[in-house]
Image 1 (tube, rainbow, N blue to C red):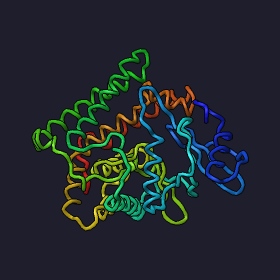
Image 2: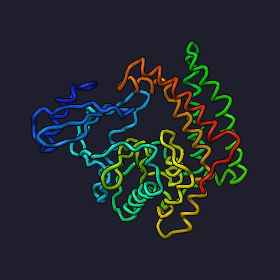
Image 3: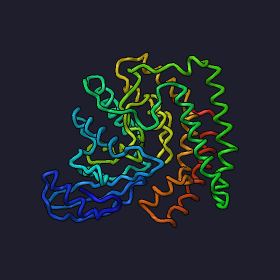
Image 4: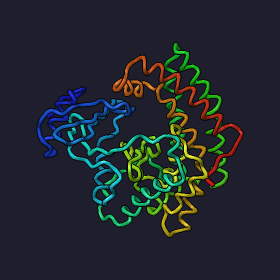
Length: 352
């Protein structure tokens, strides 16, 4: 049984390697730089390379990131989806997981090509097809899953409210005051306009109508090139801590809106085969993605400013330092302002 907190990764890795039948010697441990939410390590022992991850949890954010990732990757393994890590062993008390190693490099801007976007589409199509033939899905709703148009509105609204609540408690922090100004001047009015527009178009009954089961898909949730590895043959997909069942339109929006490595909207036509031969369902999902896109742009602005939330700051401190958090706040605020200027200022951005 592991200790809570920051247990020695070499010891945690040794125990999990033995549990996975991969030997019991202490591995060589290399801390990996990526991983905003967790601690991640490369383990090398007895000719085997694995990934070791410890998950963060906060009393104000009790989402089971480890459980979501293990369930999603187990679903992929059962359905022979080979472009993801394989779960090898885990410890739920210490929140450690051991995965097979994907040999590749993190994707960069030059890797966002039509061919690679099509490969992402093929991966998502494999997930959707696996859902259609699975008798026991064993997947919970994704983090912030949407089952109606009203859910999309509520999601964006909660994100803005959470941001405003967080910065309002930091009146002595100049950066927090700037973040509050951005939220009140740009995000809140934009949210109100979108809510009014959708209410006029669909009416309250339309907003509350539940999506069909066919429109729901196994979603990685945090899907984007920031969580993709470029391998010798094809792409590898990582980080499924928020994965689960979700609206296919929301999944498309998240793929398009992710700010680290943004995908040009015109590339999304490469993903239209995602919905197989059901052209009508595909058109409806793309139309809905167009309708809720601005809401998710606003949501992603709030995500960029997550560093002003107390729980998020503590999560960052789990894998970094106080100085890094301060620098990150300044950088994320600049990113948010640039994102607003690029996507939310005076121009309509859609899926073409």
